[in-house]
Image (cartoon, rainbow, N blue to C red; front, side, top):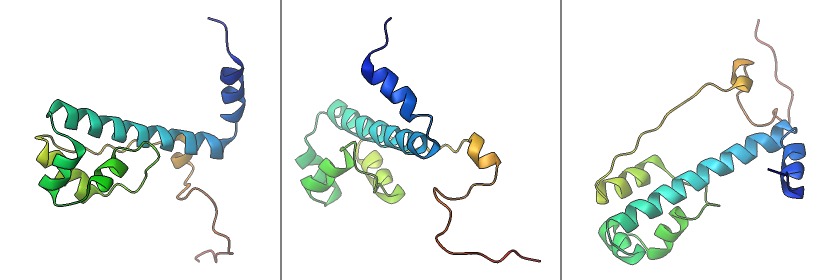
Length: 116
């Protein structure tokens, strides 16, 4: 299959470690949003009905199902899962950058003292 301009552009952008990390994180947000929406639809209820069950707003459910939203709390995901007859499972995997001891996305903007 022939590569599109976008495919070539994305390959180029993924060479930048910061972009690649953010791109993967965005993929995680998409996964969460799609899973929540699919579970709700499978249960046959609307966002408004789910919100009523959870005693929250329809806007909050919409936000949780939005691929751009990254403010999911574990407690809210558990509440939603419980209301939809599902469970939440969090999996940690060691990435190549983590093996090098990277603890944050960017180095701190201040100097740190090395411990003796």
